Structures are given as C-alpha cells and as structure tokens.
Length: 250
Image (tube, rainbow, N blue to C red; front, top):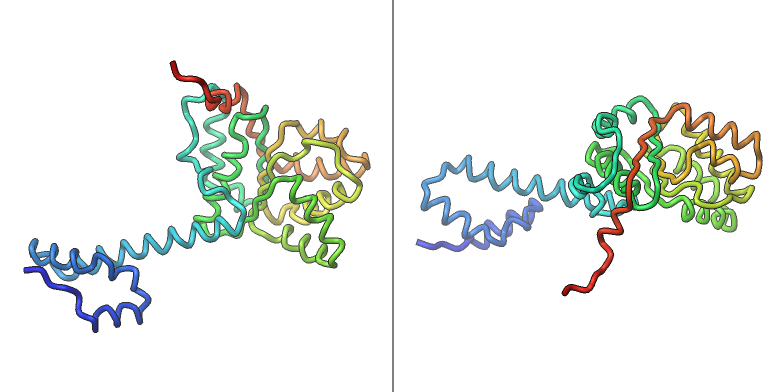
C-alpha cells in the first residue's frame, strides 16, 4: 500500500538540511517496505547517496571558484589520440606526490595535444584532495596583475598566487612579456619556490623562454628556480582538434 511522507517528517528533514532527500523519498520508502528492507540499510543508502551528492556539489563549486573547466578531467582524455607521452610519469603525477614535495610540473608539446586538459585534470584531482587551487591562462593572469596595480590590490593578488596550494598556469610563453609581466612571474615563481607547487603548460621549452623575457639575469633566475624543480611531461603528436573539424556528411 502506497504511503506518502508525513508533513512532520518532511519538516524535520528540512530542519536537518536533508530537504534534497524529500522528493522521491515516498517512493523509496514504499519500495523498502515491499522488499522488507532493514531500516538501518535504508538509512545507510539514503545518507550515502546524500553524502556523495554533497561532495560532488562541493567539488563542482570549488572547481568553478578555482577556474577549472568541469569537462577537462582525466575521464575525458582520448586514449585513441595519435600522441605519445611518458605514461609512467603521468601515472606518478596523478598521485599528486609532487604537491606533497612542493615540486612543479611542466607540460610541453605542440598545439592541440591535450596540454590544457591535463593541466585542468590535475587541478580537479587537487580539489578532490581538498587542496586550494587556482587555474588561469598565463595571458589573463599577467594582464589581471597589471591591472591590479591601478587599484592597489597588486600585493594581495601576488600574495594569493604565492600561497595557494596548487597554481596552474596554462599556455605560458606564447608571446614576449613586458618588464612588469616578467617581474610578476618572477615574484610568483620565487614566492612558491620549494613551498608550493605549480603546473605550467607551454608550447616552448624553458630555454626558449629566455628570448621572451626582457631582463636576461632575472629570466635565468626564474627558469633555474622553476625548471630544476619540475617534472617535464612532453606530449608529441598531432592536434586532436583536427579530428573535431566539421565535415559535410555524404
């Protein structure tokens, strides 16, 4: 016999912030009665489901605040793509032991081979570990820091970028940097040296960054601090975007 959830039970659940369980609860209770389900097992099923939902909501919220793309996760990695990389190294990076050791990761390769996906995917793993994360394209980050000088928020922005557990910078060294941009990048790398981890993606090797930085000595110091504390994950192959090119169906 079908029974509806009583108003008192609904009210009590909402007071306990379990209101999300109310829709569909009547059906689940009736199904449990029909199957003679133990009340403790029913409660465990309900609470486990709610715990998982809350964890997923929290992950989604924190990932959005960190600037991560929700679709760029390891499950989205196309294992049939025509690219080569060090599988053992990627498996090691996925453990996030490099974060515990305050080491960096440099993901290098031509356009379209999945550098951005892997950068964001490592960020999602860090979020799942309850670490603080910030992810931003290099051009946007440096532009934002330049603008922050106008409203006196530059120091606080730099401090935040230096103290977040994992900083992910996508597409670094695409173009020459101004003196201010190079100085900001140097301050970030120096501020995080052996204290917190970075994941950087780039089309260029660190030796090629020298030509894009205006102050040679500062550039050498920056590259020395970062490159000598970073794992190099090199991806080679063809762009996956070529496979996504629209074509007329015959």
